[in-house]
Image 1 (tube, rainbow, N blue to C red):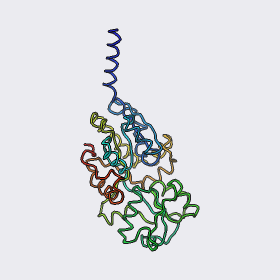
Image 2: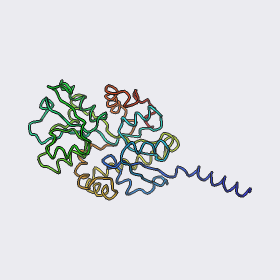
Image 3: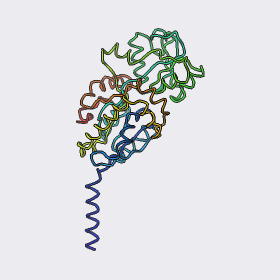
Image 4: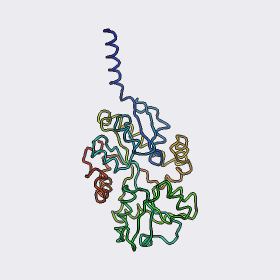
Length: 316
């Protein structure tokens, strides 16, 4: 009996000591995981910890796994991360991985600026998310009414995945989409153009060099607090993976297809130059993050948990 108890004690001790010898990464199928492809392909271990990955269709599928301590690191829109932090404190922001990459696409050659959209309906990918609030902000900055007959009408009646097919079939004329959807549309039809780059418009009004984050890398707060050196090592590897993505877009595309990230190699490699991937560590991310989060506060306070996240949100 004593030997059995000793064995169980040692077994439990070993589990507690080595429980963090694994980094469990949650990846969202689609564009947000593209900069992680080189990391996943080349790193079976980081700082002695085994790297494991699990893919998810969307954030609602990923989040419960993080909140149950089954995933350590993940990717999600900034506003979602802020809302989770404000409601539970369960995650921290480790850095910005993707800045704005929104485009107004159309087959029309008559649209060059916002005034040209007066009286038009624009189909927007992402109700209650960055595409809606950023587009509304820019419309208002151009002194145009939103959803007025002589202004610009926003429609969210078409699911994001169906917007490009509808545009290609001439069932709609104007759409605001992120990458890689704009690239996909242009690859499928030479008539499709990026009529307005929303990032350039934002920079014009917010000031030279201004940008806004779309995607952030987050970690479970408990994991980050107990494994700062390991998390720092992971972030260094991620930054190198991001750099390789920009240097070798063709190879990145091939890896994403091989790893079954849900995107064809050609789409990935072609979209990378417009996708606005970055890596901005959390200590430098706050200014741009709060600029975007203030837009959410102005439109729907509940969308980020009612307030800007405090210092604890930004991993140090």
